[in-house]
Image (cartoon, rainbow, N blue to C red):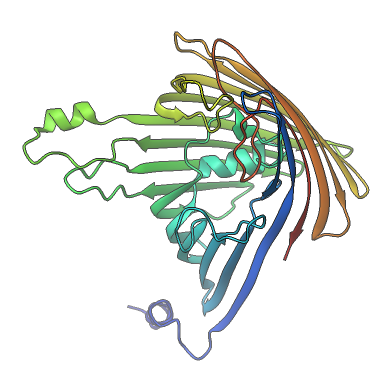
Length: 362
């Protein structure tokens, strides 16, 4: 082994080396406002909610320079409810993200609880509302997994505008190694004002352990997969940015109904075969930003429970960190579909919602 390679290995294995430089930052989002909902059995509903435009959170992130182009990074992030002062409702210490990784000239490898490539595609590349406010595209567009547990992810460097991600989530179910496992991947192309991204997510929805006496054939018969393919694009025309997305969702759990219009009524089964489409626009004008989108859910099952959503929004930026926002969205359900208007971290109950609030990032 060459001396340089040996020293690089020592650097990777000894992050406490004297030359290393470490930086740790505390960051977060404080977001809260008022939500008014109509179009459900319990409506009208008026409430104060946390995380309407962006889920409120508190996080810690750090980077250490390991030398030779290498660095170590970590993120620990938990959700916060500003309306009640409670910690995240999941009971997890860091329910949003919790990972550590090594990064260098040839990309990065990270380990832990992380966003899925499909969710990043929907939030960053496809939705002008960035999956927040009443215009949230996830009200109709499938997003079965926001984050993956037990994830090993590789992120490639950017080469000529192209980059890729590959993530594998270990199911860790005793007696059935395939149960609960997830696979996510994405390919991104960026060239000036143009951003293109194609993402794929495959989730095994068998989460119970196999009986000790089960045969291989019986285990395979019980296994089922949900798959999501999402293509997204946005283009900055200068005076506005246009957004477009199209998705194909197949299998049990591929397109869950995140919210219910009529809680007292039987919940209709979620679609196992659907197509989603989105077209949207974001128009900045000084400290003002105007947003609009149209989302279509095309259910290909025999139930034919289609739905569409139209949404408009407005943001007023006091500064780079603080803004006021308001948005309105309306969903039309067909053939017994029960989709409702939610927001960044708030589940909705009505087909129509208006919300307004303030968001501060730090």
